[in-house]
Length: 438
Image 1 (cartoon, one colour):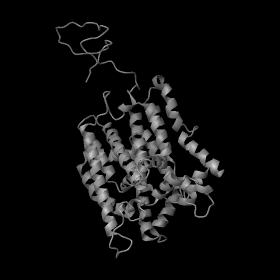
Image 2 (image 1 turned 90 degrees about the vertical axis):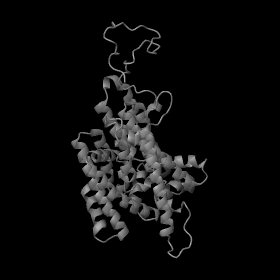
Image 3 (image 1 turned 135 degrees about the vertical axis):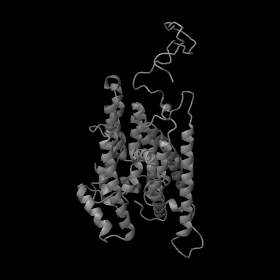
Image 4 (image 1 turned 30 degrees about the vertical axis):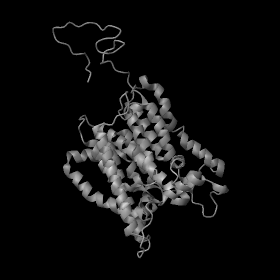
């Protein structure tokens, strides 16, 4: 590591640097200690710590990928057992196909969009049997359609997208975690990935859902922002917004980090990259284009929001009304037991999210607090809570802080694994057998 002044034996006098090739190997005579101006972080492919000579994975990265592959084997083993143990007909002599367990819930919306588009044959809101597919952003269906050109089977294409995206996401998560420690040998990155991959709703990372693809864009965007590469952070945040509306929350967090960490006098030009997805006065480009597209086909500027309301009761209610309605669904026997227990999980997860927000505010982690607060506001102001447990997969600050806590208090790791591992298996079976898993 270069120091502020090159080291020399005491008896040698200091000589002024000479222009041209030197013994240090620097052709322009610059000393190794000279640094770039603040904010200059090298080429785009340096996001994951690659050297100029190419992309390299370190020992910790390889361990993270091994952990990822092993947990994928565990998830697929669970899917195999689910097909044999929980067939629709208890007297069946043959199990379903290998991919049958993965065709659940939101997957069908993404598949139909990729195959038919949003308004096939002029159908749309008001058409009998309409599935409100415009509630889903186009990023994942577009990628699915592109991969289908190479992979003919739609289900395999969807699972492959999630598999590759998940690998990128865990690498980025581990690197984000390692930014919080000075020790290069710290297991913090691997621990954060372990907790993340064993989280209760981790099965959604393997399914043909948006979580993996979103995280494969969002986490590198945050990593780029932390390293001062604002251009790359802005581009990735825009792409993430095309996958999920949560990309807008990410863009707001990146903007908050830019204001808090950047030297505006040196980096004022970089704000143009962050303004595209983040400034309140200028909606993110993917969201704006999608809104325009829906209006062109429905005549409704709020078509996305209205689809959310029709299909998932996501019309605005105050936070206390949303809590009350979810509580009633969970404990007043108005829902079947399967739905009731998931509403109970929604309540517990909302409390976890509020605790996370409180910890972030106490530690003055303002950008992460902005992201978490916006996420909780969006999830907590509907008629009742929906998909809050799944949203925990997107709360990367929680996995980093939980991992750091477990390193200081070893009992945290044991407690987490003993409680969460069985719960993750139960929710995986719930999802793979076609029941609502949050």
